Amino acid sequence: MNEYSEECLLTFLEKQSQLFDEPVAGSIEEAEAFLEDCMAIVVDTLDDVREYLEENGIDVQGMSKDELEEASEVFVLPNGQYLVVES
Image (cartoon, rainbow, N blue to C red; front, side, top):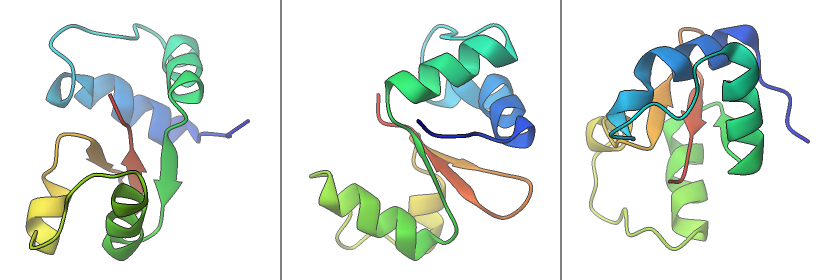
């Protein structure tokens, strides 16, 4: 079971529309349950984001770091980490 910081959960709640057409969570508790269900991860660098996406069969070859950071499944956290959510 992953442990998500309050900062991570609030960021996901605020920015979930970048990945989903309709809200999937309306509270911190719902956000945590959703992220756990889809096995979202928090990583430290964009290199880690690239590695994770490649391992999960997503073609990111040729994408710049800026493009990776702007991908809909990548949420930039205020502390400099990245939340990666596969839809």
